[in-house]
Length: 388
Image (cartoon, rainbow, N blue to C red; front, side, top):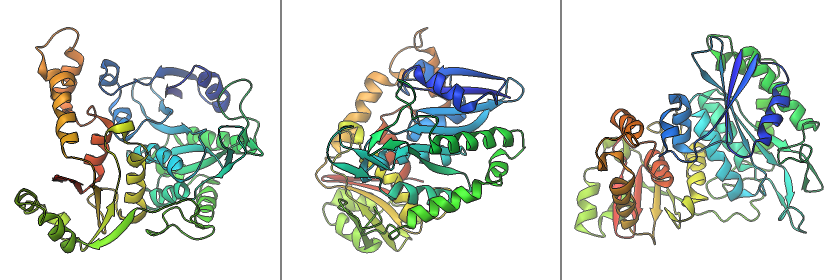
């Protein structure tokens, strides 16, 4: 079996991954992930990698091939050395969700505890939200989604040699190495993911993740961080859909006319979960672009498609103008979309890609995520809905 490792970050990842795989592959081919979905390098990616990058970009996407030609995803790995509290953990959850929803098992390596700024006095504990999100993904998709501890000593991270990756001689990384070896062993099966799901010890890891997620109390809409909810101020609300639509529609004739065109799959859901981000484009939308995926999986989604929801997921940008969407997409069309220029040598790859795929995976990241996950986007002066 040959492994293709798509990665970003410094080249220290190569040595770290080689040791993690530990001779279980005939060869490892390393390829840099594109810095932008608008680049010509993005157009050359296999479709399954591009589909993962539509929602977010894990640090590593491992693929495998047994014939040297046909690839399929093996595993994604997110190296999250950040402090692991609620909002930081959920920024990394979106990378797990991006992988699992596209059929790729996922691992996030995240400290259980970490000191502020690496050596500060304050210590942050990992929110159980990311564990609960992983459990919900596994319940819905039946695909492994695990959180492994970044090894630490009293809140100080332990790294491999002089690198920036987690120490491989630690208990959690030895367990990760074992899981990757199980994935490689299962890869030759026709249904690789199901074979991995049934591999010895994998269900024990599923049970452990569930136990950790529910420890101290499962996350709820009023306490989405779970446990004692320390430091988490929920900005979520459940409301009857008809009352919410009536309230938004009463703001202006334009909003009322737009909401009258809502597809039935949105209007027919009795409840809606209202999420209130404070920004859309600024700071790449972080951390809210990670949170919305968690709120979807944790409290709305009941099936593999975003159409399969028990309640609507609504992003209400109370202090953000709809002009942010209009201006962002206009700039994209005027300056980034290859259709704005004649076909040339320097744009033919992007032009050809967009002829086939459109701009679904190349427009600005916050726009990609909200248009993919939100049923309705409400702004201070306008409204947009998911056409389905």
